[in-house]
Amino acid sequence: MTNPENSPTPTPGADAPASSSAAQDTAAADLQAELDALRQRNAELNDQLLRALADADNTRRRAEEEIAKVRKFAVEAFAESLLPVVDSLEAGLAVQEATPQQIREGAEATLQQLLSALARHKVTPIAPAAGARFDPHQHHAISMVPADQPANTVVSTLQKGYLMAERVLRPALVTVAAPQ
Image (tube, rainbow, N blue to C red; front, top):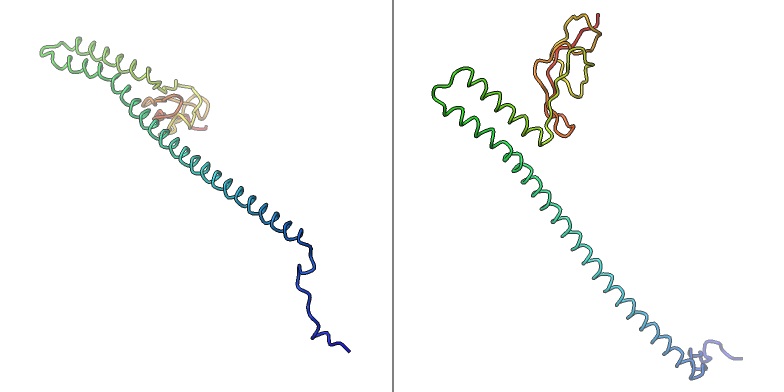
């Protein structure tokens, strides 16, 4: 009787032909070539990623610089448009013996210069007429008074408001008709 424990165990590949070893070498070489190609592709993608991140950072930095320049030059242009107003006020103050009529005319001319400068920068007044519908986005009601007009309409404007490019800088101060 033969003991299976004492029988020789077959070694893998011992009975395999020599061509099997060559196929394994070819497969290993193919796998190594594929691994090398994947490593190279990974390195290329890493490089592309780093370049894209650097490009995004540069774009962000350029945009921030551009925004800072726009803010700076917007204020500069606004200040330049106010310089003639300053000049007019200084010229008016330099006159020693101006009559009240001359002072009034100078103040009116200076006001027109100022309003023109504001208009060039899209700053427009909000001055609702009596009877206009109350708009809480543009008006600030400081009181409600009994009036002979419909409720929630402007009775009087106490102080003009101002818009800048359709954005409220300051709402107009108004009194509003109370409900009856």
